[in-house]
Length: 314
Ligand code: ADP
Image (cartoon, rainbow, N blue to C red; front, side, top):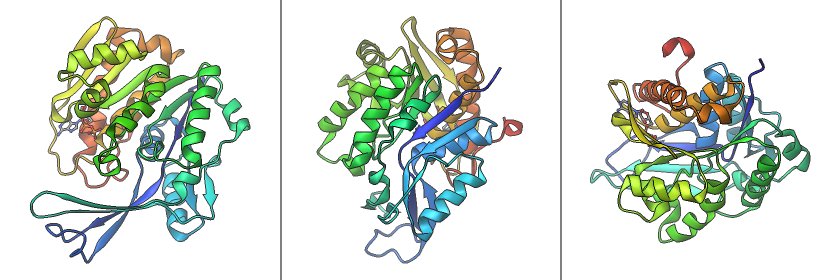
């Protein structure tokens, strides 16, 4: 049986993380360059676990774009469908001030230039497609491409996964617009991954089970709500269950959610029919337990991509 390809669509960017933590960006002096972008992290997670991941996104023709391409290729991700744009690579600068406040500057560049290719849309047929871009609803050709690839994925009977990756920094005072833009993806998805905060924001409910009931009504049959050290709340039309995580000595939780969904998608890609696998509660529970272990593993080392597990680690 052939393992399905997982297409991960969205942003790939540089995170410049301030080293002298405790100061805001006006005071920050040193920054460490890290490959970032949730859909790219997911692609690396899938590939590192032995799956077949394809990245669809855009970076600049500059050294940062080359570094990002090199990082994905080093992890075995297929980047033949990635685009190199005339625009500079997207950069995010982050620091944590001594009062715990995050200071964030976003210099949006190439990620938004991703142009839709109808030939690629046709290529998605029968595959798995992960929509997990934090930046896809911020306008530009990427937003248009996102909507079109969603239509192609539906027409091609793909297994569709959606992770909204809500970032407060990007949507201050525009949360309602963000929610509206997520709705068609929730409606089309076979699987959604939310944080607790996202599940409440997207549903407008105050409590998790009511939130999941509402989100199922929108059209998504399987919802995973990741709850950090506690594990994952898995909600299906038959009800909800908490799948506990394993103990971890967490030093950096960045990318745990991406490792989780990457590991779940990689396991689904190995089944005869991912949609049928999602409809089997015990199988789903087992897969989520393994995905929890992947998330837990990632918290034990610094960095999102550098900390991802191999099969031998799990
Ligand atoms: P996100 O990065 O999207 O916020 P989480 O932090 O909830 O996602 O992490 C995803 C998954 O990784 C969790 O559901 C859990 O299974 C696992 N995980 C995360 N943090 C820990 C931790 N401190 N201990 C054990 N497991 C963890």
